[in-house]
Amino acid sequence: MGMSNLTRLSEFILIGLSSHPEDQKPLFALFLIMYLVTLTGNLLIILAIRSDPKLQNPMYFFLSILSFADICYTTVVVPKMLVNFLSETKTISYAECLTQMYFFLVFGNIDSYLLAVMAIDRYVAICNPFHYVTVMNHRRCTLLLAFSVAFSCLHSLLHVLLVNRLTFCAPNVIQHFFCDVNPVLKLACSSTFVNEVVAMTEGMASVMAPCICIIISYLRILIAVFNIPSASGKCKAFSTCSSHLTVVTLFYGSISYEYFHPLSRYTVKDRVATIIYTVLTSMLNPFIYTLRNKDMKRGLEKLISRIKAQMDMLSTTQANKIHRS
Image 1 (tube, rainbow, N blue to C red):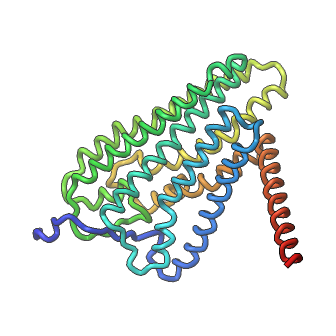
Image 2 (cartoon, one colour):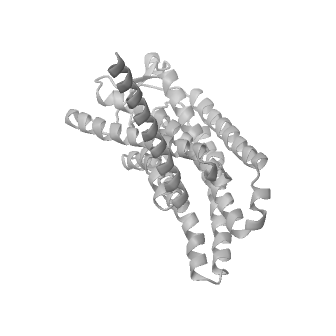
Image 3 (tube, rainbow, N blue to C red):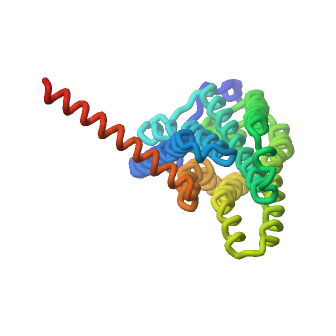
């Protein structure tokens, strides 16, 4: 192999979801709509929680942070994907690729740990309701959030530094729509053994730790719910957890499918799994958390009414100014 092929590449080409030109505009329209729905839905969740005093508790605090993380998570991936749908080159620089990979891993791990923290919150609320305010106090919530962010940043930095030490050869085509770890590793002509070992040990531990935490929390919740004598009490307890369980299933199901198999078995199907946990889950979260939550519905209705009232007041003011002039 010539020395030119061993030179560090200055850019990669993202193959995207389809190489057929006729698919690009329909895909652009589809993902633009999904991205706008994701931004609008999650932003409404954040504003509703921040503006409603009745939603000022740990569960909704973590939900607002999850919505913010989801906005960032999709923003790391989707805008570049939209540009590539309408571009013929579909290139991404080496530095931009590693930056995208880093922030994708950061916000993906923050999502994962927030889901675990929210499971702990539900466990305390259902199994230890009289001490809920004491256990889930503001200081403890802040520490849980700080740990989630700090660990996610360090975890992501480790994997990006390990990728940066590799040598990449031509061709420089990434079989994906963004710079995910596995598709980039497949382009390396130097050994990826260390990367794969770290991914299957530290990487798996970082994903399994919150997953195990969620499983233990819900097993304890299940035991506590079965001890509730009334059927209505059981239904009420389950209803507070159903939204969270739905999101957990979507998120961890798709992640497990993609990452928990050898690098050599990485296929096109993994791109579909990636869409589920990067775009689809973030888009569905606002609907999942509001459709079966009366408090969130009420908070959103108040927010929308307030926005409408302000818009009516603004239009009235402008009409009066025009009338006077």
